[in-house]
Length: 297
Length: 163
Image (cartoon, rainbow over all chains, first blue to last red; front, top):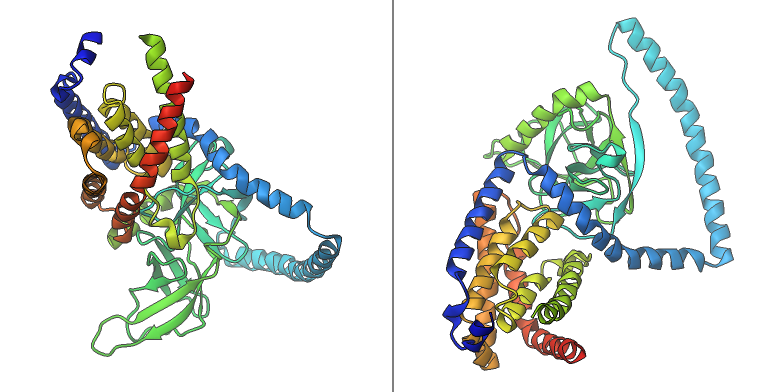
């Protein structure tokens, strides 16, 4: 080593540089192939992911600290105002909930009369979004729960107003989720007004979804609420997704040009809910969901 | 010898960790596409200065960590970082004596190559991404390089005199 340092002027002295880079390139390509075709490398991913976790926490910490400071220095006046607002809201929500309970019981009774399968109540859990940016090529977010908490790939994520996205990579303590606005994401929806089924595709813009598969004569108009149809299996049925904001019918084209605005505040949420629906439904449905996504490509 | 290499490694590892934190730090949507590739800049700098300690192997490891924290294909950033580090190590003596204008042009070429490899892998794997995600970091990376270089030279000088 000391001898080679003496010869520092000759760049070719760095031992076997070309060979090393060639080997590493081949390893990279093999890794990428394995990662793309199969999911054999989940273990490695999880291992290194756990090592990166402290860094993610460190990046997230200042944001949390800032929020905590904001919370602890709010004036008493503001707090009282907010308390009043929340109490009023709670009263309203409770009133609605009472009706919902009655309706649910009635629904179950009617379903029993019709011999239909009873709808399963979904389990939910609140997760916090970490202030960590990930992949520059997709709309995604990192949440602070992982396989340790029972999170699985393909799990649906919603916020208070609607569907946010789904989990795509589960780490041990964190998970990455793709937003419904991602250009590679598609989810099966139906129009709440008439049950018309279609697929909502992300556009890569955070506030817009496309509905590319609706014929010109489809019964859809601006203001229609789109809810998950549950057909893909990945998302449970009945969660609001988006509101249609424009329908353009061009007579020469086979399909109408329909765009919608996501109900969830995709770029503002801080807390989200993870949904555990009935396991068998999810198992059977995952394939369909993937197929839809692939067909979209 | 070992004490020497340890004192050389420590500051570099610190800068790489800080670089990774800057890489995953959230930015407003409008400027996110223009975030410089901090780790690529760091690897170019260290490969230029200490090509015997920081070469293609370390670049590959850094790339794998980057792939995991991004959730991209395992090996994508590793491949790209490895290739530009190779080019840097190969021409490090030349790059050290380049005037700033010429060095900036070289950095631009290296960053463009880096993004091109990422773009190419994305194309093969059918990952769609807005084009600004590719050329944004190249431009900001090149613009930021002179300041980055001065700052990092300071870091290097200090860590050396401290050791």
